[in-house]
Image (cartoon, rainbow, N blue to C red; front, side):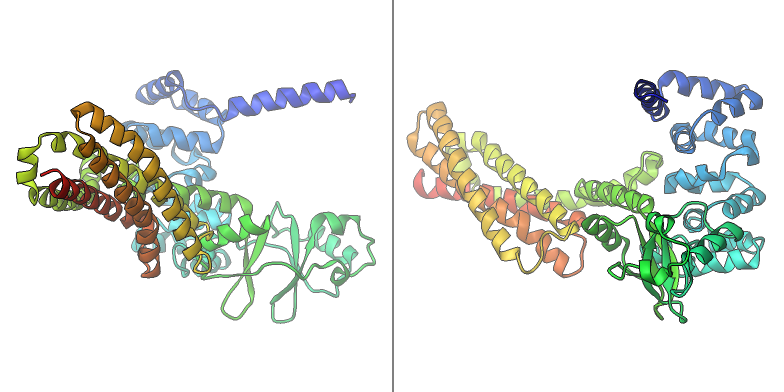
Length: 466
C-alpha cells in the first residue's frame, strides 16, 4: 500500500472511530424506544448489534425505567456480556433485578475476572452465592478470592489471568508455551518472572522477547525495576502509581507476596474518571448521586447537606443579628454586606478546589504543606488588596462616603485572607483525621467566609462609622 493509500485509510478509520463514539442522538433514542414499544426483537437486535458495548450500556442507562425493563426482557440472553461491565453501578443493580440467573451466570463466565467481579459485587449475598454455585470450581475460586478483598482495593481491580514463567526458561520454551496453552489471556504486554514461591522477581516485555533469540533465557531479558502492588492497596494509590511511573500493567500480590493477578491501564483509567467524578459530586454536597436515582432517593441524599447548610446560614445570621442596631442606623451596610460574603465564598472555593485536588494527587504532602499555606496566604492578601481598592472606590462613590469605602476595603482584605487560609487549612485538617476533604470541606469553608466576612464588615462599620 502506498503512502497516499495509507493516509486515506487512516482518515477513514479516524472518521469511523469518531462516528462510533458519537453521543446518542434524540433521533436514535426515539428509534430504539419505538422498537422496544413495538416489541420488534429482530430489528432491535440488529440495531444493537451495530453498536459498541459501551454505547449499548449508555442506551440502557438513559432509557426510562419501564422501557429499560422491556428492552432487557425483549433481548434476553442475547445481550453481550461486556455490556453488563460497562453499566453504571446504579443501573446495573436495576438490570440484575430483571435478567434471569442463567443469563447472569453466562455473563460472568464470559467476562474477564475483573469485569465479572464488578457484576457480582453489586448483587445481594444470596443471589451472588446462587450464581457462584453454578460456575466451575476453578473459576469460582478465582472470583471468590477477588471478592474477599475490600471494594476499593487493588484486589478487586485486578484481572486474575496473566502470563508467568520461571527465570530459567528459554525464549523458545516460553513461545511454545504461549502457543500450546489454551487457558491464557488473549491480550497481554508483559510476562512475569516468578521464583519457586510464586513471587514475582522480574518482568519481560513482550516486544523484547519477540526480538530475542530462542536460546536466550527469560532471566537474561527480565527487568527488575518494576512495581509490585499489594492486594489491599487502595485503588486511588494504584491510579497514582500508574500515572506517576507511566505503567501499562502492574502485578498484584497477596500477603505472602505470591502473584495473584495483574492490573491493566484500562482499569486504572476508569478509576481516575470515577474518583474525579466522586470528588466533584462531593464538593457539591451531593455524595454518590446518579442521574438514574429516583426522586425520593435524590431528595433524601441532598436533604442532609441542605440541612447542614441551613445550620451554617443560621450561624451567619446570628452574627448579623449582633449588629442589627448598626444596620438600622446605616442602610448602606445591608446593601454592601453580600459583596464581602460573596467574594470571600468564591475565593475560599477556589483555594478549596485546588487543595482537594492536590491532596487527591498527593501533590500536597506534610513536607510542603507549610509552604503551600504561606503561598495561599500571599494570594489571599494580594487579591484582597486589589479588590479592596476596587470595592472601596465603588462603595465610597456609590454612597458618597469615603470612610464607608475604607471600611468595605478593610473587610475585603480580611475576608479574602481568611478565605484563602480556610480553603487550604480545613481540607488539610480533615484529611489528617481521615475524613474525606472533598465531602466535608465546602460547608465549613462557606461558614467561615460568611461569618468572618459579616463580622469584619459590620464590626469595622460599628467601630468607625457609628
